[in-house]
Length: 384
Image (cartoon, rainbow, N blue to C red; front, side, top):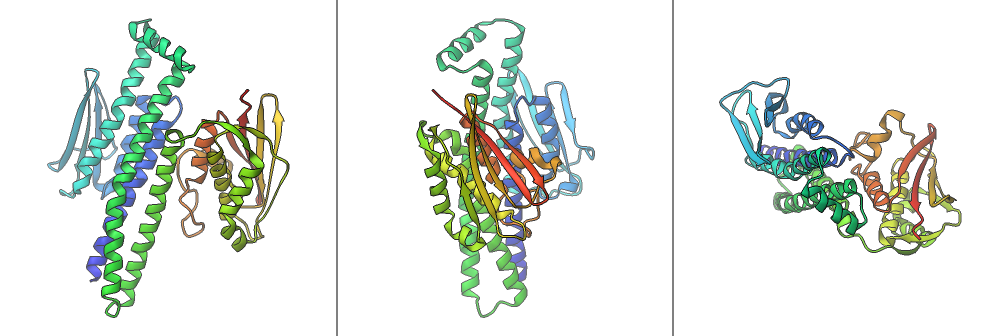
């Protein structure tokens, strides 16, 4: 029985690694103005971490006459390879096991997924290079489309890439839900069926697995939410930000009461926005302040001021400060900056908030004032 529990725990950890890889890969590709060369360089290191035995996994990526390799690269008899043709060039990914054939069945499928999602990004990058060289028929068509849509050509290209990546995140997350439900069902069934026969060690394994399933489900839910921000966004309409904050507080009532959180606010404006996303935005920001609280009861103050043609909002709390070197990672990399044992959560609350604000044409930044005092600023343009 212990061996079965260990195997289930191992399989769950491997699926968690795959999900982490999807988060990080998606985020790398979404980085503004990133080049294909930079994506492939980062992908080389990232692929290793997604495989069952990273230290004994070697990776080579070839695109045309350029190749990227891990430091430990050498060819062996144990190999996975997939390739795809993109605009008369071949993009290939080769994975070698340095010790023995230890590949998992879904690792080959993961390579195909990576190639399929890289294809539109590389095609768009090549299109941008061609547009810079000459005014071709494609440039004229893109210009016409840009004029019709009201977006610049760069924004139009970036929008297309983002749409592809959001679809990738959405579909992949949905695919992970069914095996996750199966693991949860069987573990709970084992726990109930063998309730009186389990020793302490086996019960501990089952607890680890159940906790892992819950964390993965939350990660999947957050990834789907991230992909929905643009995909399922509603039209902008006059939105009372005072009401949005109150509704967010109602949603978080249990967490607020349990943590003795005190929330105050100044009078907030009514401006054009997606009301449901603004509620989610305040829910995420308040939730993060509650999670990363210090020893004292959380105190949160929300205010806003108009600056020229936009509103600047601030959320001031007395929680844990973040080192300056982590500012960018806080919003961009979809990574946790702390150990899971220290604070609950998936580490995606601020990433989702950033995407919501960007959809509204604004920006978000963090400004720690002291070791136990932090302010989050974000802006929303005034649409006339």
